[in-house]
Amino acid sequence: METMVAPGWVEARIIPLLFVVQFLTWVGMFAMWVFSFAMVASLSAPHSGSIAEATGTVGKLFALYVSLAAVISLRLPRLFALVGKARGHGLALLAGAAGLGSCALVTAPWQLFGSYALIAVGWASISSTPYTLAADRVTDGNYAGAMGIFNFSTVVPQVVLALCMAPLTQKLAPAVAISAGGASMALAGVIMLLLSTAYRG
Image (cartoon, rainbow, N blue to C red; front, side):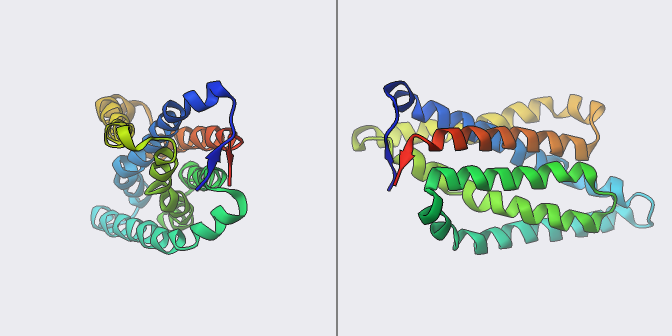
């Protein structure tokens, strides 16, 4: 377990700061979930049967990032032992952000497999590490309430993006929308790296 060695103002705000990191992270993930099909369909448009092809490709992409994340998660403890849990999570977020951001550069569906492999690195840490970081800062007496509130950090960005989805689809290409989500996740990664200086162990 990592312990805080932060100035008082940082320690007092650790949960809100982690909430911000989570919010920015899940904006990126939800953008990927919402716009992946439209992105792949637009890349497959010149070919016949593009809808069926896009459906199959998205299924393979999602299977890749989920299964690869499961494998990577087994190696995360070794990374955390080397660089620390907080810093390791920040690095994983930056890898995921790179995957999301690279979607704007692809010109064919097959190129997305590299992007989603990077997303898998982020997802491997996103699915568990933030909760352990938050749990380290919550006392037993208010654990249930604090973690319940912390769960809103995964819900609020999904609601916000869902409300903004129609304007986004009118103004942004699907790949650009996913890349914008990558920028959000990159900011989360940077904040996490800065915050990691407050951790030791």
